[in-house]
Length: 100
Image (cartoon, rainbow, N blue to C red; front, side, top):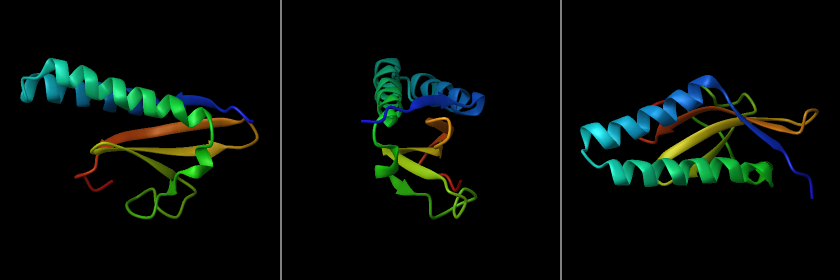
């Protein structure tokens, strides 16, 4: 079984931080914020196995450019697979209600 390295762009890290801040500060629910971010991180790290099993990105600015998406609750992680380096590169993590 091939194992891929999972890397996040700086923007993806910032997206996850923003998700936490929004839930903790705007929704006033820091416990839920931590739980949501933990689920997102766990799902993203799970991309190390079978990243090709996920959907191609078919809408938004990442469509038609060999990007894939991972759905996590109400969020989506958009990523590319670098087969030569055996690396999954997560470019952004966003709320599904946003047009990206």
